[in-house]
Length: 639
Ligand code: COA
Ligand code: AMP
Image (cartoon, rainbow, N blue to C red; front, side, top):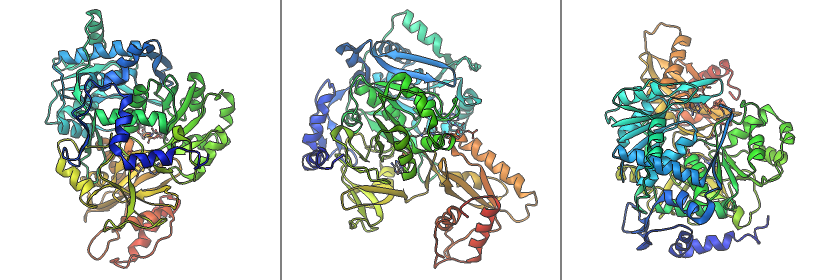
């Protein structure tokens, strides 16, 4: 690890000096039907577009070209499911056969270029097949995470108006089978944009009744297509055409539809496998996330397949399936060379097996690197992982919006020295700056807003689905000429970034991004609630968990505990279990400024036991003591 021997600085400087030359070179690793007319066109789109005029197909690059190059017998997807006791390997040849047949099934429903398809599915190989089948047809998939409730699914269906919804009878959580079908039915009933049909994968753990005339059995359609020898060819699309929409939490209850294009996405992701992650084609790669999140899209499905790797699809947890040695078992059984997960997974393992005793039971000799992202990697967890695994542990920082790392430690270019608490340096193509409220650059080691100078590099969102104006307002207008990451932090004198927290109301719960504003909307909808505030409070495993404060309407005389229970249930029903909303606290009033703004930041500091100062503009200082006492009563440790 020597900053002088890494090629990073040269490569980064090249991308800054000549972005078009740099990305044109990276684009050589992708197969195009027609090359780009312009590598970057500043006149197209909201802030310009990459690979304008190029014609390509994402599925071809992920699957068919590897088969054509003689890799048909190589593993592409290794499905490892401790919750069902199954392991299944799909080779590139088998994947091509499945995807081409399933794309033909979709075609029979009239799905073609530009049509949307919502995928609400668990971590099974069919989900990957479905995503790739959409890509094959130039249809736009939108995967919705299984831990979201019906209302969240309905919002997404309404926003992207899919022709089809693909789902399964159930997901499997440790100790609990989650029936998807009732959630799907409710979502469709709630949605105004009704899909034409649903294709349902019946899992042996739970059969779902199918709605006549609307629902079709996945296995039947698949086997009929295969028996008839039906296949759909890859449909050429423009590099700038959308590949997928992935909804992510915004500052209101209405999620943002992040759009990913075909061309830039392939180029940046393929580049990252080689130079950031340092992985070779043919090697086994594992991203322990969920296909419902961006990490799953990019690094369970697309990037490893673009690069010709075998990708592990893990339907299990870091602990409890069956124990805290689960990750080591998967690594040793499948010969994983690099693992990418969220720090929360390691905190969960560390809690159950603090000495890492279970590591010794497995052969991890092929394992080279651990990558962490999704939330701040606390130095304690990073050091613990280094000690027990004896491999470099690399924190890297990115967002749903970018689709790949903004900052990281480029293993393939030669690792830079690790500084604990920092996801290292900006990746090529990102001009990351720390600025004050007037967009003026700040000196090293000074906290400020983290922004990226436009244009963003390939793979980053060109806009929000059919909402250019919301895209501009949310990301581009506050700091003209820059993209606002909504993260705050600083850069040191060596250019190492430190990401300290969000500047908006987003919280990060077990690596899942959630909007406290969205939760407040749910709390406020309870008939007995007059006012509310939701904050994220520190949690030893999940990083942060939400905590809701409610003020009841005058005249409500039911026991507060009963109402609090209803509120907890309401968040689970409206947003989903993924919100991990378990703590609602009734208080007589909320602390506010004289102008009526709720002091959420101060409440959070009190809850976390962090130093805080009395805000000068506070209306009534005594209220903060009331909040502190209420938190203590409920056993919140920091308060
Ligand atoms: N479908 C249905 N429900 C789901 C779900 C899914 N796909 N995923 C999670 N849930 C449920 C869980 O069962 C849990 O329900 P409960 O309230 O009944 O217990 C709830 O949503 C909260 O889930 P989670 O926050 O994941 O907590 P957990 O206690 O089940 O597990 C960890 C904690 C740390 C083990 C888990 O978050 C994890 O494995 N994280 C790995 C990192 C990761 O995937 N990050 C994503 C971005 S990289
Ligand atoms: P998501 O869009 O769900 O990937 O969440 C993105 C947000 O997660 C970022 O804006 C950060 O706030 C946070 N985040 C992701 N990775 C890191 C990291 N390595 N360090 C600190 N915060 C991170």
